Length: 562
Image 1 (cartoon, rainbow, N blue to C red):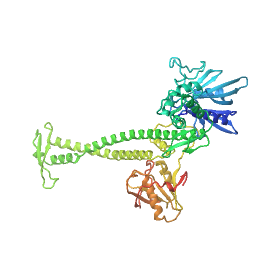
Image 2 (tube, rainbow, N blue to C red):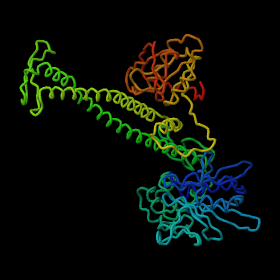
Image 3 (cartoon, rainbow, N blue to C red):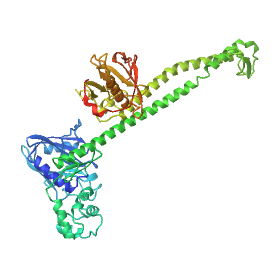
Image 4 (cartoon, rainbow, N blue to C red):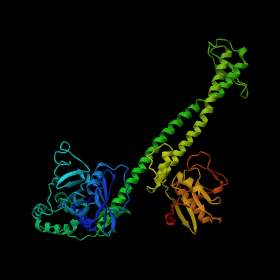
């Protein structure tokens, strides 16, 4: 739900109550659409998040972590210059508009000023504008007269709110009553959204059932104003199928929240995380598909070269037959027919010849062709094996990306892809610790089971396992490596079966009815030197059939160490 004027009215009150009197400690701009202001208010540090993204525009208090870029953008530097150390005096809504005014008292060593930061929450037109004495000091999104002749947002220009829409302002009772008097029945929610300023359709859909449907304009205006300007709130996140579908300032049902700010934060955080996850997954899948396409093209060319060596033995036989029958081959002939004593019954075979060459030279030509094809085949075979290994490795990475469940699952996968040259390496930060995402962890009747999320985790799981721990992998499929911590005990059949079902679920055969899963002790699993991440060889294994099952009821959270 967009933060319309009705919702922003309650958000402004809650922001003012929580942040007024707070001192600005830090300002960051984690993305081009967002500025975060950290204030010490109410005895603690709180983060005011101001976002101008077309789909996620909002103003609220959030505890979600944000990472500041190494180089602060220009607008961030502007805010730091003018607002660092300032005191937030008030947060107010501008009329009944989708605009919040944050007023700061800025006291320096030699200057004192009152500056206002306007947060315009208007979908794709959202913006942040800093002013002093009504004059624009800077804006997140600058527009000049050449770009927008209706409204100029440029330093030095007097700030003016966006032009009012051709709708009735709820603060003007007379104008509102006159507009509502035109309602002649039908969809009241749609009529309100089309004719009343500052209201989004989801809000109108909730308000309409509470209004008299057959009242005149005067009564309808009074009833609507009573609902709009009441301080009553019943904040909640509306969920459909478990996912956050919307949030409301006044809603019966859904996930109850302590405040409208909390409801908005939960809703937008889930939506942003979902979008970020999908975009990250799509980017990785795209890079891997492009790599897979190149590898399959390379493999097809190598296979074609190997097929071209199919006549290698035929050339050798022709050379041998010509050498053995030089006396019987007439000079200058285009072909000759000889008995092929290399085959049973010595059938006759016709051998093409070049007329300008002697029989001996024709024989040498076939020997040279044979030797050339032999060298080609010797060179192509290992290249094909390497290309197949590269393709299988890329398919395993694609499997990891498609089976990811959270953004944390991509961390080590991206690191592996950078090491493989699939993704460009980012600039290295000094003293930055290597991030390690946790294993999937399960508890089954006192036994601990762990499953890797990616190739790097699979290798780490192997390194940290004891020799007699049980290791599992789906047979002939890409799958997660699964480990049962034995601690010297004999694993019960039900625990082994559960681990096999988890292994089958996190494999390419997730949709199969039964999946063969190989099981052996860790000491029989070896990683060849210089092998790709996740690649192992194993012996002394048994195979169990398992039905893929995620077993979420057994999940014991995650574990950084097993």
